[in-house]
Length: 222
Image 1 (cartoon, one colour):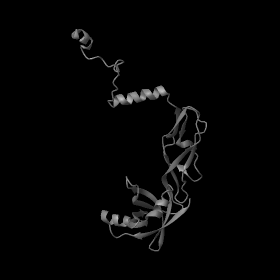
Image 2 (cartoon, helix red, strand yellow; image 1 turned 30 degrees about the vertical axis):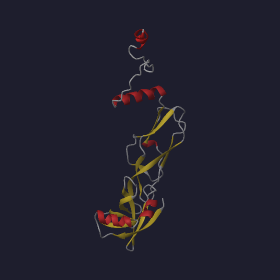
Image 3 (spheres, one colour; image 1 turned 30 degrees about the horizontal axis):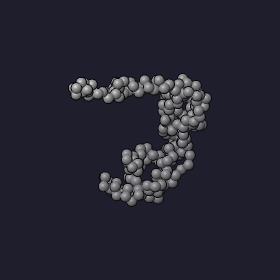
Image 4 (spheres, helix red, strand yellow; image 1 turned 180 degrees about the horizontal axis):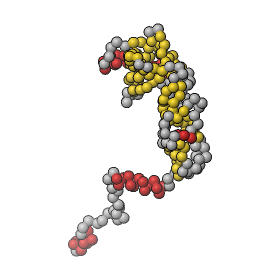
């Protein structure tokens, strides 16, 4: 796991207005805390931070006022519409220290034909050294048959990493793919539950009837 060096500057202004001004300067307001220290309010360069956060559980080497601190992202807040970074909480870590983090699961391979693969848990909670955190855990479903489950305790972990969550938790489930009839039945059930009613079309709805009394028109003329 590589470290990403990033420069930080202290913040002295707080509140929504101050945060907006920081973001207008292409920076992100953040808080650095942990190990019993007082929280430090800082600003980080937005583009560099965005690139760094593309790596899950990235280890940041934060340069602040002549000193360097190691930190992990604890909470990342993004704008729900535009997706830009609004605020980041960073927790201090030390070399050799073990931390508990959620690591993404990457599913690969192809299960048997006629099956449907469902990822029940997108991450695994593990304990590992803060400076040696895995980026992801590969899980292969190659050739797995319907009815197969991959449990958290069955996922291979690198040396020095231990599972912190439930080993019996289902990570990936391989089930038989539904038939067209089953899909139609489920759709009909869902529509009925939502109160959607499809009116039956009359077989004769397409026929245009003659105006009432039209067949008598000839006799009337006589």
